[in-house]
Image 1 (spheres, rainbow, N blue to C red):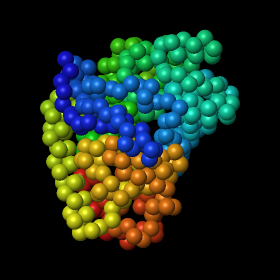
Image 2 (image 1 turned 45 degrees about the vertical axis):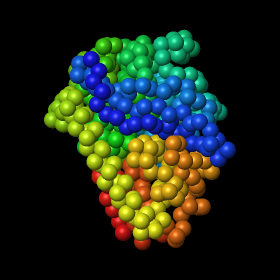
Image 3 (image 1 turned 60 degrees about the horizontal axis):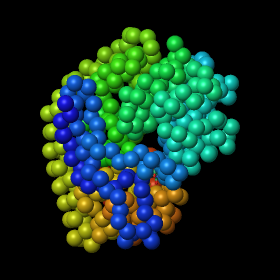
Length: 391
Ligand code: TMP
């Protein structure tokens, strides 16, 4: 039985940035809430918006847009090139920072439903299917390319509503001794960091290793190893699973830590929901106090996470003058729900700013090291709790 436990109120689609001419029009909003199932341990969304409204030919999030992610995917591709044999399939390849670095002898194939990004990898010679991942796509891909020895998927499985079917389809395309390697944001990091803004329309499920172990077990896949990725999306898990039973000490450790933090109990999520309400009050008070003093506040990085925070806290352009973002597809538009203008860093970063809120909080160190000209400003974050980090 699913038990409702986390409520983030009415939210827009986190990546649906709005052109000026559409500001007066009716904007789609849905109720962002999560429920926990004590039998499956799954923490999943109560009402997920339609996937084709989120992932389509105008999807703006480019995983090649940050140096951290580009290096991360290149390192992982090098690792796979060296340590794994056979054909490789990537599910959710975005603009290709992983699959484009895979050795062509491994016959890389990509699945990417956002056709604007699918085109990029296809143009680089990688067979790319602009389709959602499910059993039909698996059948088509397998008919054309045979079985795969590695299926890699980063920040994608948590987007899929019928995830059991998606894993079943993975199992069917894997060779008998093939490996599924998947990366997704870590549930315990969200709990530890109070980073409720990891929750938005695209994150249908926040996986714990507990939940994945049960879910994968249902389709005949077994977790063999868990790696923790400290700097990726605020903390992620990389899971290695295969058709062969038997996990090493990393799996046992991950399960032990999760149990200690109570991921298997609904009370943990009820408490989290209470904690984030206090979090919201403290964060908005800090911003209002600065605004009352006449300070100019901007936000750095028009992230999906910031969409959740700003809509949950009711922070609009009366508080935040604008958001800077390096992604050309977001610049000149307005943030979902709260309609804060998004501008390029070149346009937005200048000496008139007093306070910089870090919307891309998972890149805090990278950003602060980079922005040497703005070290004299006040830098503000809300993760793991609202506070001034500099200034
Ligand atoms: P992400 O947290 O989902 O990776 O999204 C990061 C967003 O923040 C993306 O739109 C790019 C933007 N960004 C900047 O504008 N400047 C930066 O230095 C970094 C790291 C990200």
